Every structure is written in C-alpha cells, then in structure tokens.
Image 1: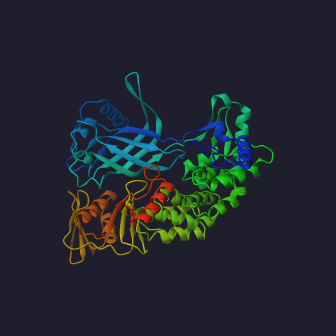
Image 2 (image 1 turned 90 degrees about the vertical axis):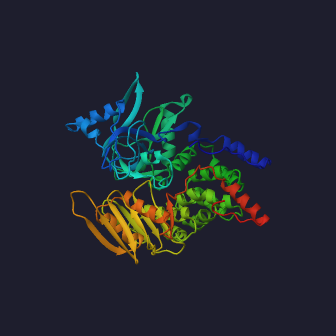
Image 3 (image 1 turned 30 degrees about the vertical axis):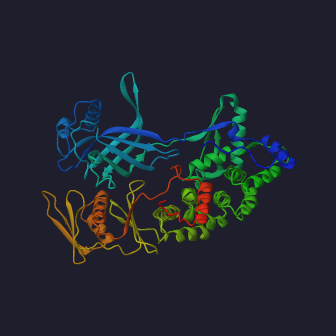
Amino acid sequence: MSGCAGPAIRSQSPEVEALVTLDADTKLVGDYAAAYGTNPLRVERAALVTGLAGTGGDPPPSSQRQMLIADMQARGVAEPNTLLASPTTSLVWVRGYLPPGVRKGDRFDIYVEVPADNGTTSLASGWLMETRLSEMAVLGNRVRDGRVLGLAEGPLLVDPVAGGTLDPLSRLRARVPGGGVATTARSIGLVLTPEHRSVALSKRIGDAVNKRFHAVIKGSKRGVANPKTDRFVELEVPPIYARNLGRYIKVVRCVAVAEPPAGRHARLELLARQLNDPVTAPGAALRLEAIGRDAVPTLLKGLESTDAEIRFVAAEALAYLGESAAAPHLAEAASELRSARPAALAALGVLDDANGLDALQSLLASASAETRYGAFRALWQIDPSMPLVRGESLGEACTLHVLDVAGPALVHVTRSHRPELVLFGKDHPVTDGLRAEAGGSIVVVVAEGMATISRFVPGQDDREVRVPATVADIARSITGIGGTYPDVVQFIQQASSSRCLSSRLAFDALPTEGDGRLSVHEEVSAREEADAEGIALTEES
C-alpha cells in the first residue's frame, strides 16, 4: 500500500536529468496522504457448536463460558449449563476478519477453535449456532466487546488436509467457508499527514482523484473521493478494482495533485524510459496507470519489450485501463511465471470482453492447479451465469461445477470464500473397494462400478441411494439425503487417501501474493540461467 517507487533511472544524460527534475516538481497524492482502513478487522465471540457425535465436553469456568451463557440466556435458553454439559455440544471461540471495503451483507470466512482444557475431543460433524461477532478489547482487566459487526453460522469443516495427521489439535480447529455475514460497511480513504492537513489541500486531493476515477454511486456517476475533513478523504471503490483493493490504493497514491505547466508530456516521456528498465518498470507502470487513458500508447509499447517483467507490468496496467490487448500477455505470465500468477489472474478478471474471456478459458487446461482454479475463479466472478462455469446448487450445502475442459483430471475443494466443488474434466470415477464416511451418519460403499450411499440417524428411517461411482454423482447423493459440504469433503478426502480416486485432489489452489516466492524478474533470470545449464524448472521447484 506504500505507493510508487521514486523516479530513479539508470541513465544520467542531461536530457534525462532535466526530465527527472521536472518530475520531482510533480506532487502526488502519496506525497501528502497515507491509506486508511486497508487492514482486516478482527471480530470474535464465544459460541456454541451442536450436533457432535459424543465428542463434546463441559467447559471449565472461564470468562468465555460466562460470555456464552449470557448470550444463551439473552436468546431465551432456559438451562444453558445443562446444554453445555452435553457431549453433543462444545464451547468454541469464533473469529473472522472483515476485509477492507467490506459492504453490509458481504460474506467472509469463519475460523473456529476449542479453547484449552475444554474436554472436547473433536469438532467433526458439528454445527456452529448463530453467533454475533464484534471487536474485543481488554480494558481494566475485563474483556469488553463493541457493537455487532457480523453474524456467523454453519456446518464446521474440520481441516481435511490434516485429517491423516497425528496432531490431535487438528480435530479441535475448523472453518465455515463464507459462514460470516457483515452487518456493517467499512470505509477506506486517505489520511493527510499532520504537516499537510488543511481543508484546501483535502479538497485539492479529492478533485485530483475525482478527475481520474469515477463510479456509479446511488444511481449516478460521480467521483470516488469525498473530502470529509481537513485530514480525511473518503474513497469509493470503482468496480474494476473491487477485487484488488491494494492496487487501487497504490494507483490513487500515484495520482498527480500538482503538475508543472507542460508537465504531463514530460512525465510521459520520463515514465516511458523508466518502463523500459526492469528495475524501474513496476513503479512506472503504476504511475502510468494513474495518469489514465493518456498513458495507453506508452504502455502498449511496453508490450513489445523483450523483457518478460516489462511486458507483464505493462499488460497489468493496461488491463485496469480496459485495454484487452493485454490479455494474451497476462495469460502468458499466469501460465509461465508463478510469481506473477496472482496479479496476472486478477488483472485478467477485469477484462470481460472476448480477448479476456478467451485468455482465461485457455488457462483451464493448464497442468498447474493454481492456474486452472485461478482462471475458473476469475471467469466465475466476471459472470457466474456463464454456461462453462455456472455449475449447480446442491441444496444449501454447496455448489458443484463440472468443467468440460482438456488437461489432467483435477478435483478442487475450497476451504475459504464459499463452499464449492470444482471438477476439471467430466470423468472422475471412484474405484471399487472404497468404504468411506461422509460425516457422522453417512457411509459410502463402492462396488461393481456403483456407489451405495446410506444414512443412519437415530429416530429416523434409514435412507439409501445407489448411483454411478463418480465424484459428481456421489456428491449430489450425499447432499440429497441431508449431508453437508463438510460431509462431501470428508468423502472425497477419504477416497483420495485410499487411492480409489485417480484424479488429482487440490485444496484452495489459489495463488496469493507475498508468499516468499521469487519476484518476476528473479524468476525470469532463474529460468534463463537454468535453460543455459540445461535444467528444467518445474512447478514444484
């Protein structure tokens, strides 16, 4: 969020020195203000989990127990202590993180954990009862909570990746993908530094930002900046940056507030030179994006560079300026440069024309699970009704997407964002000999190419269905007889670990930035060096 790099450039010619001097006289938003509201906001609460298969425990006396009992009494529970003592329930601590710019009604992930010395041995098959989440703080040796900022509820997904480990604590931690709902909105904006605070400068910054960015707000198109006080400028987020708030803030801080006469032309010339140098290209691309449409010709020339990083940063900026010529270059970066993949897929996700869609669809057949699922996610966010990615709803449990695409068979399961099962390729058979559990009451048995899904619940009639032994058919049947998303995930994980599922299984294969991988330039250099030595760099290496 810190903004753009300075105007450093390797050449020291008098012509360039003059351009640098002129550029130094240009004042950007980032020279006067810092970002506000760009960190996640933690919300939490003690809560009750029900539906456990005798693995619950009566929690010891604690402030968390007192908090939960008070909440239960407020909801009209007559004997909360008796309910807490049941082996089918457990006290848990629930937390979530409201992302920057969240709006009322937006969903977010929920994390659940059993406190120490609770007595609970497993959260498997549990259901998180509705919980009101708020900020917590310790004041005067007491835990204080603020107003309710979110609600949480849903079936618990105990970490399927840790299912085969010897770590007993893994059974005491769980998630509810998309199980939180924000009950309020969070503002983002710019805070003027103390030495620059004034009503006049706040308005100048607002005018500069509004000249560059617009959005449809309450049915009318207007600028995104609203100077509230002498120290704060509130920002709306244009739709094109809705899923890349970090880049939006960086670009806003690169908007020029004061520019010398004829400075725009000189700045473009200097930035064109900086764009041709891999060291200064990333900062130059951000500044060019902040200039807007006038910078498109300069960025288009960057696509002709022989340097992969220059082509990538130019294409990324062009995407946010609505130029679909960037699509093939972004697809190339997403496919070949792992370090650039998150940003490349995010940029492709804002190109909703034919070039952008074709580029994303071409990535669905990649050998990389990250690339394939990232492309699917981008296509779904562009248009959830698109036939290729629309999928089907399995009741209230999850959505199932079967993609008829080339490439190796891949089953993708999410533990965040929303409960979702994505099958790359139409055929995902489960072989004979499998006996797997799907939650505490459902059993799946596969024999002679058919799967028998049985549900046994005390006090209810037994239920049984037989379907072809494929992942899609079995997932539909599990949810059709009352199973949840965690039940489906448990079945898939057991089928994979028992070697009865030949398709590759991947969890949350969505690349993220800042994960310690090589930079784009470092990765290109490494690949060139490896090519010279005859070494093949694989996805894993």
